[in-house]
Image (cartoon, rainbow, N blue to C red; front, top):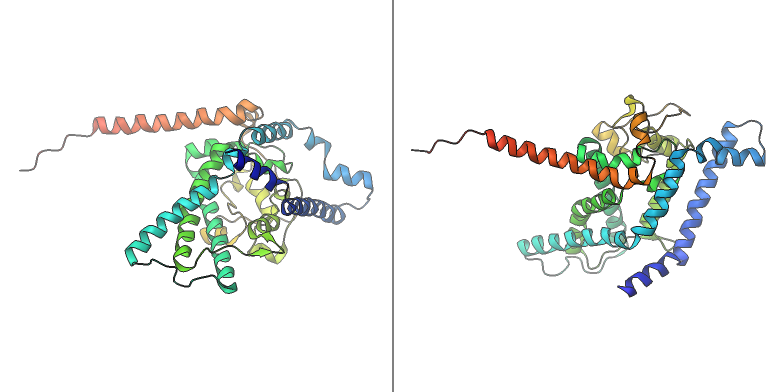
Length: 331
């Protein structure tokens, strides 16, 4: 266990992670500069920083709650969450490999060692698998009341400050990774039947999933910066589209569930396109949002309310069984 913890700490300080952190920071600053020069006529260095970090946003109770939650979550959960995704995907991949391999008599990978084309196709397949996994899980978060109680933590943010992206309850995050295991793990298992030890492509040594996170601007999409990708919006879900997803306006409820790709929302009828530079009011209903601006509201309240939904469902199920008429014996 100590070796595992040490390895994870070293990995966090690796050159790749430092490069990635630098790219994410550069993306955020570049986005802010782009929006600032596009929308502000009288410019100054001081005004830029006020635009980048507005006083009314950074001092908002929701922003303070984001920071407290981010600190406590980083302190409590990192070593629990590190291996979860790999464990779920690996377990489902192994089950798929064993089941289908046994059913079809496949004892060795069909195509041996992966070549460049195999790596590219495998990478695209897994990106799509993870993306549709996220879309379906995100849809379920909004449709099933017991899941919505956890997801309220994320939607209760009344301002967006970048680290709002991590305003996700750990149980919700764990359930999401378990669902990734079902879909992405299944496709990974299929690939292990086709190729020996398939690995995703890298770009200049940077993992493709990191490149995905940079492209989708997860930090920027959880700010006030209205970034659109123009014609690319038909493929990639831009930050402004995701900001609409956080809107408290009922017209925007249950829209724009996607992670990286926008075509899932288009195909399944959940896409909503914002007006150019449209602004949104974020959060839940006013009274409900206030309940989630403390550590108790962010950590404990969702569990209590989720448990309440499950208990009511169990009581209702028992009640149905109690009133079901007894079946007459067949003659």
